[in-house]
Amino acid sequence: MSVYQFVANSIRGSEVQLSEYRGKPLLIVNTASKCGYTPQYAELQKLYEQYKDQGLVILGFPCNQFGGQDPGENEEINIFCQINYGVSFPLFEKVEVRDETKHPLFAYLIEQAPFAGFDQSTPAGQKMQAMFEKNMPEQLQDDEIKWNFTKFLIDRNGQVVGRFESPVNPVDIAPAIEALL
Picture 1 (cartoon, helix red, strand yellow):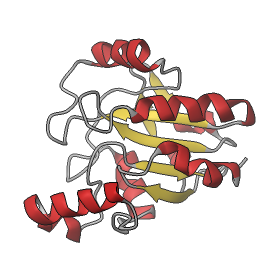
Picture 2: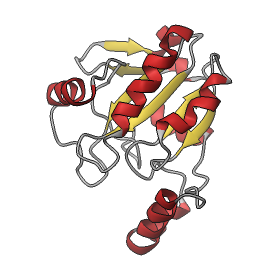
Picture 3: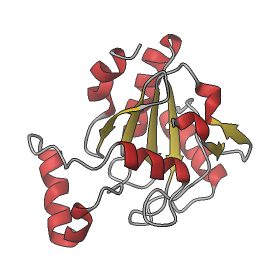
Picture 4: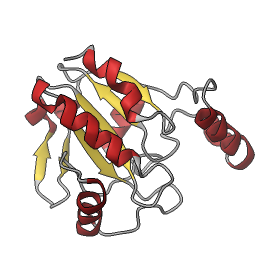
């Protein structure tokens, strides 16, 4: 099995077979427009511009499951991303990424790359850990996506090779991406 078996709708509503990205490394990210991590759109765009000619494709999937931080309609989200962050990588329709209602692609990603914790060597990782311990300790016990901007790195064969939690700055993923190019 690989990510190529899944289908999702583009932000404009057209069906996209993920097999269209066969042979390209992918970074699949659940995003939000009103989150403290929303500025990661700019870093994702930088990564995309830096590596797209070598094959990297970033796929953004807006989600409103975490604090209601992406309440807009798909077109609003698309315009927001273009105007504020110059996003030119593919965006998809808003989906759910955790619990029983999650999109099948995200069920597969989570199964292939379970939650391994927040990086406690960084202040941002420590802050997320503390927030979950205080407010949602039960969620630390499962493998579900914890928050906006969880990133899954996919190799050229459609296999998940890494999961990077919300606090991880996209530019810090560059060495893992370069290993796949």
